[in-house]
Image (cartoon, rainbow, N blue to C red; front, side, top):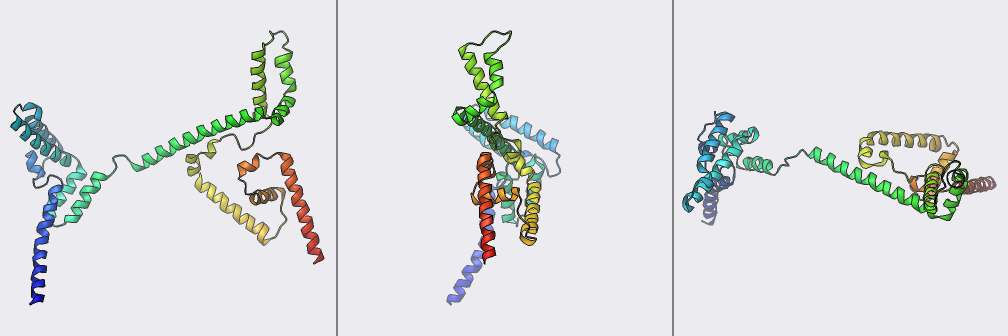
Length: 302
């Protein structure tokens, strides 16, 4: 007896389920109304006919054309139905989805998926958005790089070590442009100071080679993404070359390879390593040479 009751209840819910799902379709497209009937057109009507019917009905039911409260409220409701129907039928994709729903009313969840996928889909191409975002980030990155470079040059110009070196390099230019202005009016103190700072900055930028500080277009994000396949290929070839020469063939390291290993051991980036003085790099190479000789002697003793 209990089994029969459960069976009857299950059959009842199965019969009721389509009715419940059909009610959910009230929230799709024109709801219980047929969009074609709302505009007074047929499924064979062209875009021009649909547009003409919409304009005629919109003029008739526009809320501003009705004065009394009741007629105005009724016109607003009707106007919304007309606008919704036109919005669905004026677009080919939306109209095709609606026609498909009319022809296949049993595919409830598929209709929901098509309807809400179209409604929540972005109006702008995602690829365009990504390119714009990358471009903006790259512009900010490049501009920030130049700001950091300008700050670095100003800092180096105030450090006695770099400033004295720059003054020594530009001694002749300073004498010519500030002290010995032949046939020209001498500069006042303010102008002399400005000219001296300009010369010092120029020397630091051009002749003292502030490595790793100057920004480059090749370093910005957008360019790096564009040349990524090339960069990846170069990296793979470099790794294979290193594996063949120094792991398999066991060839001795050259100076470039030694500097690479020193930088890796010091856990420094390439830009950081480039800022080191030549004397520091030479010192590291000497330490490498000493350690290499000690290793060879220990190996012979064994």
